[in-house]
Image 1 (cartoon, rainbow, N blue to C red):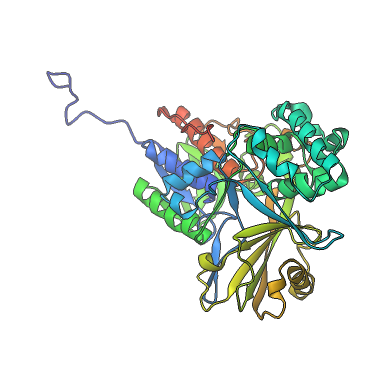
Image 2: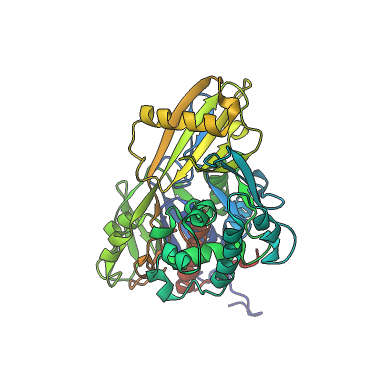
Length: 470
């Protein structure tokens, strides 16, 4: 020490803590950014040639195509934080107010358009006017929705007992008809949970509806990327990682993970041995199971019991404009949600590119493209008269067979927390115990919690950004 109490130039400085993050999806990128921001030297490993996990883009000729249509809500405060962190918020704006066109082509009197939209009134009055005029339900069914919503508002999504009940059973006990479930509850639930009400845990369904529709008037306002997802989750994320000093290694898969007698961790990846003070495993549950050291979890095989649910996306490029709205939802047809991706994809020449997002697609995920074409082009003609006579420039599909974990009853007891029994080893991913279904929101939250846990072990002060206000 010098005479004034300041450390001299020769005073040894404590070593900089190190961490390896395995997995470059939203959870892994989030954890890496926060660890690096707290002064940790971070290496991020990703087996694919890009970041972003299952929310990515690729080239098809002159088009930049998202593998699937991803949206978020105003209540997704962690994902909104992520967009701000990578300086991409302006590229994925939110609606001013929730407004969802719903077209029913199965109505006896012919195609009928309804809307689910909110006002600025407080909850639950913000949806009252929309529900009162929703043409796809009878007057009695609309009244029953209000009663069920009030009962739902009284549930605690964190109550373990709710995890053992399926959402459809609960809805039936609260006066919801099959039509009401189809035209309202599943309209929202399938898109957010990726299963229908009979297969959905009541706890996770309650989380979706309480947070999105019953917490704040603007909570369910919808946001989506107006650029390819790869620009947000890969290009901008990589720029943020580089700025934070993270060493990012793509096309580099972790082969093994072990702990030394001294307590440090060794990750073998691509022939290199990486030593670290902490490791964040931010890969899917099956891959996590394969990498976990013995004793890291009490019952590691529970990870293999977490099922998956697929999503199919149907992509159609027409030679003319056939849809004037940015998106709509559909009833009375296999089509679920349709989005205009023309501008985001870079399509030029006067045509229009539509993406059909088909959740809970287990019955269709392996069907040949020709069969899907025969099924969906006529359905689009039923929904959009302007498609009749329009030329189809391109028709293709993208398939995510393991798009999300399946939020079925009982899944809550299978989802692990962030901390493991092995000091310095942490888990992240939308499938961990975030309290949320498999969403971009859940993925980012898991990364933040993993970073907080790792930094507490490394002796670095850290507080998760405030995320609760919608």
